[in-house]
Length: 219
Image 1 (cartoon, rainbow, N blue to C red):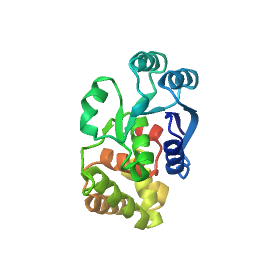
Image 2: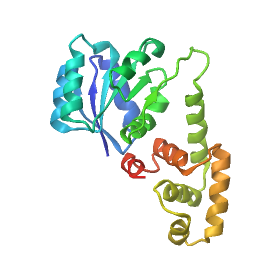
Image 3: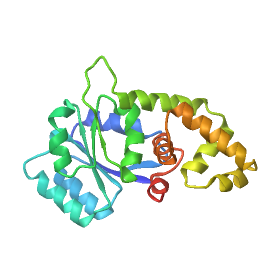
Image 4: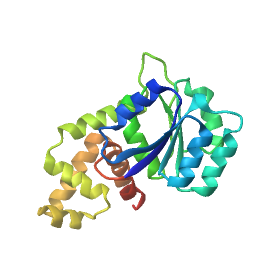
């Protein structure tokens, strides 16, 4: 379970974020706070996997509160959520120690997957984009999601097993198929996803929700 403390003072934004995450059964918002100071206290208390902070509530003393989070709950990944052009925040967010910078323009599709991957220890920084063109990352995520939606259940089981870290022989035994068929199916799936290794497959599977962030971390 990816537990989230959410810091946002806008009721409409809070409602939208809750709506985007409610269908993700492996993600739970455990506290909502209106200031970074309150959110840092909740984070120190609950030690969630993610502290999600809306950029407009950052104040001059927020750096001290976030530093407290890093020292008292080092496993918590701090993520900045913004409606601004990310170019104006990316450099500052990276050097302030944020594990991710997400754009509100794309969270309806990207938020659950992004939080899963960040919780697993990866960093995600949204790419600058205009209103007409989706980012390459958003395009790839849409392609991957559509692919998994159309994938046969048996092949989805194979992807889940491989992404969880099982070897080809272990996958073959668990699915009662030959190791040669595992290799053939895996090669086909990776070619269709345009990826070259199992780590990439595990990250995509985590974004889609086939495996948990903990399973991705343990690879």
